[in-house]
Length: 334
Image (cartoon, rainbow, N blue to C red):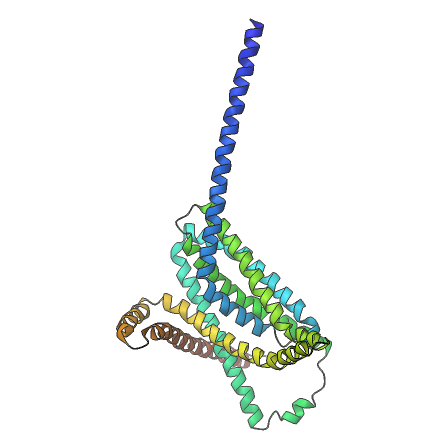
């Protein structure tokens, strides 16, 4: 009897082990399938955010330029860390909003778009004021050339300003990237949504700030090439050094335009009457010559115009509030 009982116990244990092995094999297959699905969805989500990635690259490369050459990579690294922190906040927030308050996504993105457009208009106005001051002789070019070298404190303050501004802008662009990625996986289980958004966040940060670091250090690449013995390398180095200032100016222009393109697209997406009007206009140009070009340019033009208009309104409101606060402070008894 004891032997029979022992054999039955061994048989039960063997059956249990077979069941565990079968369940483990099934779980492994499901995990592999889910991993494949996550990779595929991440690829699709990244492709859909390509346009925003280009704007993100242009904006960040332009914003982190202008600091001392020895500190450029440090500034890029600081902004990249800030960008990761942004995404650590945004990914869980997007998942929570998607589950509990999906209607809030569009208004939040519109608020971010309005802020981007405001920054774009403010930047243009500031540049125009500086240009007018120079033309009026208030800031002579000779005085600028003879200006003393900035102190360590002012350079540090410039760095902090650059980093905070870039991280602030990155937050809005990252929010749009996360929202676009979420839209591609909204029908999937929550765990797959979280996996895709996390992968997209890491890949986007590495890609954008890796390229930003390369762009801001192009002058070092040119100098290194000019130090080589090869005539071709020297010529390439000279070409890079000559092209770098023009590239940075171009990035400044593209970065400002990107503020209106991205901000305007976010605003238009939340304005059905403009979006429907744009769809009607796109249908109307379908029979025009070069219809493909018109279908590409027309949305960009609408986004820029809407973004510029909203940015001007926000700037005017901010200026009015500032003057009212200043007037109140002067009127207050001492």
